[in-house]
Amino acid sequence: MKLYKYMPGKRASDFFNLPLLRLANPNGLNDPFEFSLTKELSQNIETMHSTQGTREEGFRNHIENFMSFGVISLSETYDNLLMWSHYADEHRGAVFELTIDGDNPNSLFVHAPPSPTPESKNFGKVDYRKFRSYQDEVSSESIPDIRRHYIFTKSDEWMYEKEQRFAFHHSHADIVKVSRKECQKAFQANGLDLSEFESRAGVIV
Image (spheres, rainbow, N blue to C red):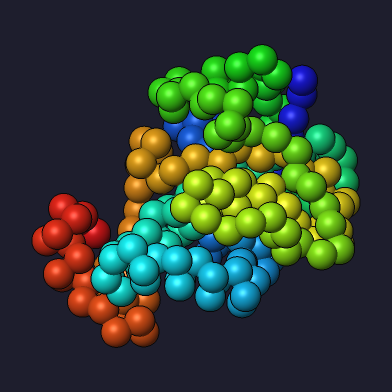
């Protein structure tokens, strides 16, 4: 199948020399509600984690399960004027045509992530809905289903994008840019110590 990637001018120019696709994290999406769990669901997951370990471990699990994944967004259309305006630098950018193997979507990448099982499918169409809340039971086993639900569900107001997307854990990226300052702020807001987390988890930011 043919899918399309809109890019602003500078990124499009760089793409010819180094064909990288940006893995957008939850905080870098233009819809502030995307990836957002409902308040009730967040409380249920927090309660579940708190019974299984410390508050720090619960926060770490939340980061790992919901904030450590990003998406590569593609479109089924190359001539949508709103897409050119929103994602291609107000019509000054470019759009690239990509061929996706429906049986093996990950073959698009030179350094392909591990092939997913059907239960952890990481490529597909976005499901546009008026109400995005997860309706099934919440448990440790359902966390992957909850993550997939929110990764591949958007408000129906974005339906014009006709989006299909990849979803990967950031550990599968070839290049990772992280702002230590922003990480520090996030930890402080939750009363946690980033340096202690780094030493325990072996994370360098």
